[in-house]
Length: 478
Ligand SMILES: Cc1ncc(COP(=O)(O)O)c(C=O)c1O
View 1 (cartoon, rainbow, N blue to C red):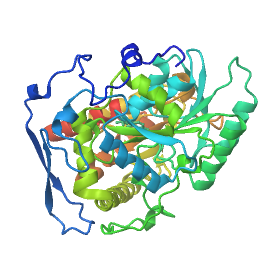
View 2 (cartoon, helix red, strand yellow):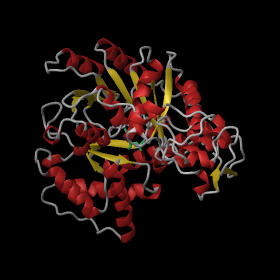
View 3 (cartoon, rainbow, N blue to C red):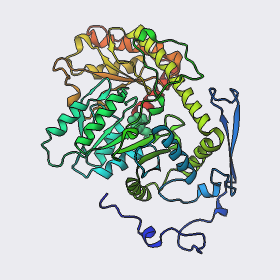
View 4 (cartoon, rainbow, N blue to C red):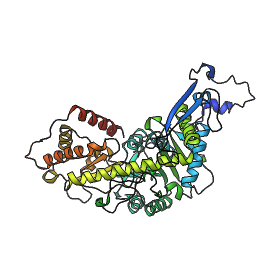
């Protein structure tokens, strides 16, 4: 960030006031914007106080500003690097309500989602050649951002609750490289790819280590609102899920534990409204947001005004806090149902072939694959992926998530047989396809672990091929 200057134009001009006759900017006149009105039909969350199946209409008018949302002309016009006022105001109030930050000078700024925000947060703390502490398995989009910034990921071992604080402390303590790491990047809830969620105790322990070594924490938390009830064993999973209210308390975020202003929290609407709205928000101390504003002004300016306007009107007017929270509860109920049915189907078809921990947030099941006789064979995983393709099922292999590079993926944590994993997402595929998909996986694993048997899967039907392509697209990018 040292080399990043505030826009030279803005530094000279400042912000125009209404009293000025503004002839400075290359700004089109709003009368040239042909979009006169935008109307959207919005579904009411079924667990809200509104009658279920009710819909409401949301309207944005060309030049008429409502009490809580800007006019279309304002949304369509150039803006600053902070985001639309009403959008940020809602998110500030909501962040206060959910996370109650413990220091005064915090704020929120609009982002184009967490992929955009990760790169910006990293560039605040790392220079090319620096290192950053990350989960052993992590989001490939973050690894790409680090590679572009020429920042080295330092893998921290994980267990069933994510990053291990003692391991983090040990790495910092034993550090012998030139510049010690200044930041941790982690996904505390429904981690991608492992599905792990940090307990409150784990979050506190990670925060204490961050304080000890003076590390900033980049809290990438797109699955925060998708926390699911925990289960003591998969036999306790039931098909019936209360859609009305699960009364579940969300585990406090790292932001809500932060007393020093060392957490940069990244939230996204991708998993809780729709991904291609390309909208999210960053919460951090205001002096950090000032820097992100500069970065926004030299890259995206801000997310699309139409997306922000739509979200702002939806959250401020159409749904309000109550409707928004009802929508989130409905999502949690839906993902709970999907997770439970998926785990039941895994137990039916993959017993002995995989090991897993039941995820308590998000949309991923991380399965350790038992490759039997083929476990020591370095080609086993690529043969498995080939067989899965032939059988017509696609899941994400472990390698793209490895923060230690491809060769380390082959090493076992225990020094024994190499451990190999697949990440299954239970969010997109039709529930009716769980059984068939997992049966196909079982066939594919069996045909690798028993070297003598040929793959006996029937070729995918055309419908299945389409479904597999959709899953493939999702897996590749996310
Ligand atoms: C951990 C994590 N961070 C960020 C993203 C990307 O989020 P966005 O769509 O907001 O860029 C994903 C999406 O899969 C993710 O799993």
